[in-house]
Image (tube, rainbow, N blue to C red):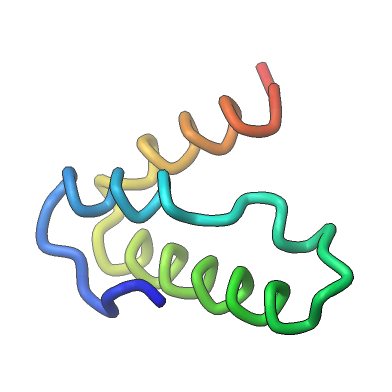
Length: 67
């Protein structure tokens, strides 16, 4: 599980790199719950630190092959 508070950009990038971006495709409920909880922490972090949103968007587009 991720820390609840992110202090800097490097920690946020580590969080994004460790996140299971494909958790929603899992048949294992435990994997889905963990991934969903991680995403909630990421979203709360972005809400608390809006300057981190471009980093999230860049990683999301990279992971999902979006333009």
